[in-house]
Image (tube, rainbow over the protein chains, first blue to last red):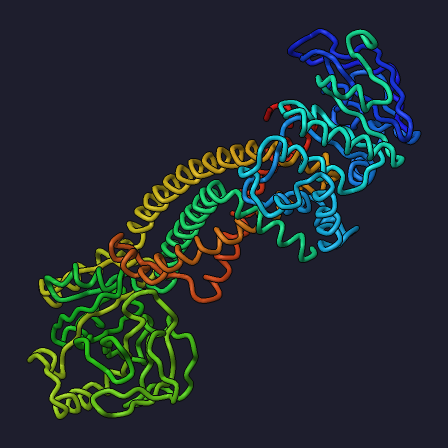
Length: 217
Length: 400
């Protein structure tokens, strides 16, 4: 499904290469965890694989096409329908309820009606145990609740590949397990899941683990 | 644009309420400034051009001590009465070097049934006139018989008559707009003077002894023959009628005013450009702050599948709606301040001021709204394109 070939990336202010000739392949139905210390390049790797940070060298083939060779329209189409991304920070629009935050980005597309999107969002919120928070505002939710809402937002387009950056960081182990268990189930249903985490619990759910220091550097 | 998209854009405008309110206020100020500056400078220029076109006389003789009043009357159309004996006219007429001469007599302002404000009554000689004729907008063919009148542009005469001292007078023509008090003047033939005065007295209207006299004039307008010196004509007039008059030079007055106009419009332009530049700088700062505050949101929307083009369209539309509201409000506010008080602006600057009519106002407002759109677009497009071009991950990470 997704193959990264000889990916290299460095930030101008740091000079050293964060990613150096990295190669990785993720198949359908796999739950892959990327582990490593802070600053090791986990988030950068996920961003490059998600198509939201262009590498200095190499290519990222998604369903046979290099994400970074696609036109803006085609890349947007991939993000809208095939790759879901959960950023590390919980960004939500302040004056919108959680449900509005989840649905809002997809409203202007003609692909689904507001009713369809709302129904689907409520179903995911129920699955992740936060259906009662749909009408609350972001500042009323805890970090774990916001993280789950961010996952629902990424899932709303039913992506075949879900990429989540630190989905359990800063959460209690119970909430972390709820999230990891859900993501594992999502992978088992035929989709792929890629997470970056410090959380050792992920080992219980992941099909395989990339230790970014050992395996990639 | 579908309904959901429209709702989403309006929600976004509300969400960034504070900064958008600042943006709106700046656009309102910019529009007020542009509209007022344009209307004032255009009206002054138009007033001056109008005056230049219509001030046909080389010199105007008025009774001694009335020079200032006469100049004010020419510039602002302010109402004044001053008289000398009409025997003066015959003497002036016979002076060598005069190509055209005509006289006018001004009667005090009177309340009339036609108008909310007082009207000025002017008697003139249609046979010799070359001063009123250039102002006449609608030609009249039947001549100005005894009781017929020509009215200023502000005087309404829907049924073709005007009622003065309880009597209806037929209106045969209307004057072009001057932007001065002359717009509410009524012009009678000199022949009608005795009848009108009699009628006024019968109705109990107060008239001074000078006004009651039939053989008086207020001013004599003279055009000098080509090849003759104006000063020679004035000298001959002194010899002929004595030192009983002052001389007003309408064309010199215009030249001096034109110099003042250059200075005034220069000041207006400098103030407008400085204030405009300041407001554009504020616009740039506000746009920069708005887009910086929306960097994360834009990045997230790209992650969720919005194209750059669509995001640029959304942000430009939001900016356009704010701009439309701001420029429209600003123009309305500016028009409410500048247009009704146009005459006072002209008077305070001591300049002829001919404000825009309805179509002129609509055209000016359309021009200002378009200009403000262009300014706001240019002041925001760089920030919008820059923000939508940042790689989503970098924008998201900077917010962390």
